Length: 179
Image (tube, rainbow, N blue to C red; front, side):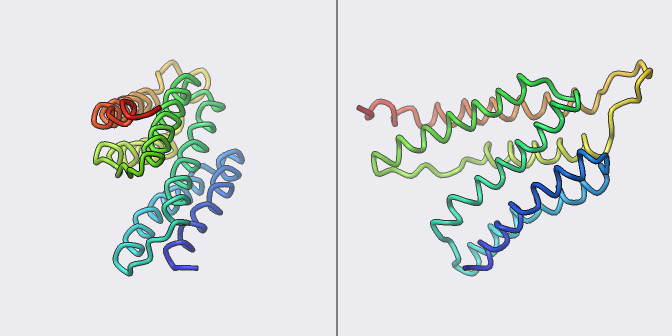
């Protein structure tokens, strides 16, 4: 097993740790674990490329680990009432649609590389989720809106929809050749 793959597995192991800490109300510790998991994504990508450790396992597990980490955090915020469930549904829809398009492309012998907008979406989403962990919701009885959650959700949705639309526009020919 390569070092890059070990780092990816480490990220997967951190996901339940993050969730347990978040649900126990230990948001600062949850934030630290989330940041560590998020940074490990950059580290494993660097190690894989720099040391020629790109594997089929890594190509599959690395993006899956990112998606599960983000979805776990978003599920927590939906349950905590800081993010609407429909926002999570939009993100899930984009992920399923893009994965589906990639499967169709693979059947045609084509690999669709990740676009910069997708990388920006991932970074923006992880940053926004960190901000939501760093700045908790206003206390009950406080009339102040949860601006951090509102702005973070908006940024997540805008980058998600933009990258999804761009992905389909650039690769629409995949469906023209599909049977």
